[in-house]
Structures are given as C-alpha cells and as structure tokens.
Length: 99
Image 1: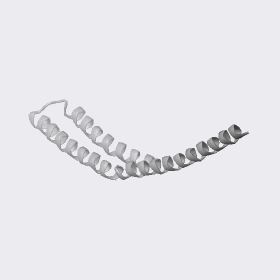
Image 2: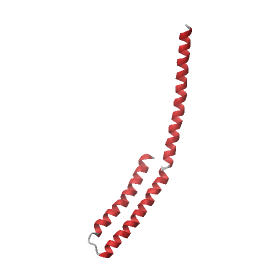
Image 3: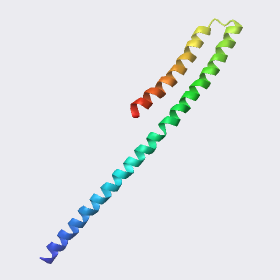
Image 4: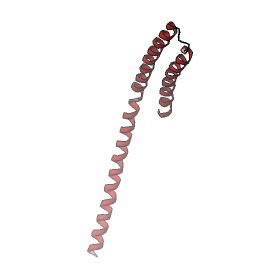
C-alpha cells in the first residue's frame, strides 16, 4: 500500500515538473521568435544596400561596355538590372512573408 502511494506521488511530481518545463519552453520559443523578427528590418535594409551597390557596379560596367562600342551591352544591362530587381523583390517578399 505504501509503495503504491509512493509511486502515485512520484508520478504526480513528474507530471507537475513536466508542465513547468513546458511553460519555460514556450517562453523560450516566444523569445527566440521575437529575436529573429527583430533582425528582419536591419537585414532588409542590408539587402537594399547590397542591391544599390550591385546596381552601381552594373551601371559602371554597362557604361564602360557602351563607351567601348561592345555590341553585347543590352544583354549585360538586362542581367545587372535583373539582379538588382531580384534582390529588392526577394527582400520585400521575405519580409512580408515572415512578419
């Protein structure tokens, strides 16, 4: 009889400790979510800055090809312009998708 009561008491103690652990786990998950969400705004601005630098480099390369009379200028301009648009759109879509 005493063994049964002791076993029941240990089972209740284990259940209570698991419920406390679950509460702390949820708080940790919520804190991690808020930390990751706080990085999206600076990350988006960083991707916009990278897009601007890529656009400037592309503009210089296209201008140098155009000045030298290279017939491949339009393809180069389209590829650099496409890369800039992709960076901007990808950053905007990821930000709107996750926040």
